[in-house]
Length: 117
Image (cartoon, rainbow, N blue to C red):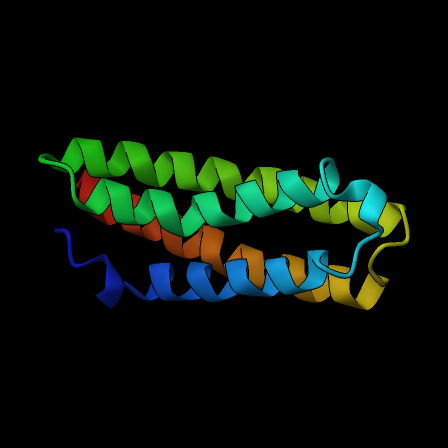
């Protein structure tokens, strides 16, 4: 596969990662090594694992990395909810981010399914 840049799910995940970095830059400095670090690591893991998996030798390896990417997306969803609970983001922003994340999750699921057949 290894032409990950052409994958729409990678493009959306990379763009979403950038948005998460921009948002978390506004969090309190006390969260730099806590929630900010966790959210940024989860966010960057999504497109990174898509890219890494696409460069692997087998389809099953690619699927494995897509599953890791999907797991990171669910971690990030939880962290977004916690950010809202701590009043670091608004309810509207939480909904917007989760909606975008759900699109990425659905795309990952469909890609995994298509590769599994």
